[in-house]
Amino acid sequence: KDGYRVVMADVPGLIDGAAEGRGKGIEFLRHIERTKALLYMVDVGGVDGRDPVNDLKILGKELREYGSSGIYGENEIGDDDEGEYGEEMRRRRREIMQRPSLILANKMDLIPEEEAEMGRREELLFQLGQVAEEVGIVVEERDIMGISAGVTGEGLRVLSKRLRQVVKEVG
Image (cartoon, rainbow, N blue to C red; front, side, top):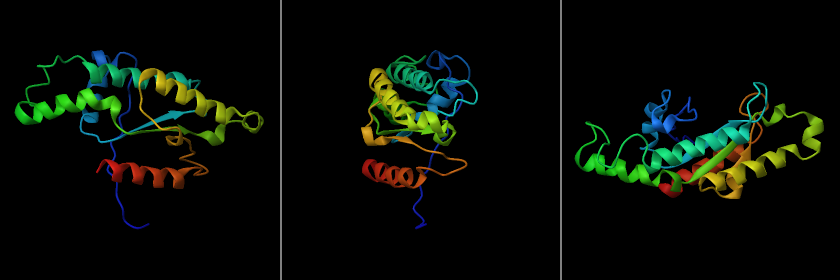
């Protein structure tokens, strides 16, 4: 409402093995080198049978592996990444997992009411936090959020405020 803007890059299609060149993962992962913060979004609605906890595990694993080496060696960043620019990209790649992060559990509104009443939402957020720690995603507990980006808009105002804070903090 106040005109504050945040530039974001959507990195779809990360699959298990992306850091080793499987699928189009490397093309997407290279865009992450220029980011200052990361926002992981997993689908908790379950409409397509995916496991959001496993999805986050794969995302974290691929970023960690890409950040540590990927398919490029220390001296193989790429022909277009020479000199000072290439050195900056190597540094950023090594620091990927240390960047401020938010984890979003999207489609929370699709969790059946009876499961929500039994604490399913809280359980999912807790499990996402455990997996984040396991794979090396640096995230504060308050930055693991449930949202509904589509139908209800649940959690979007809180996300917007927190995202703004994170972006301002990293400058």
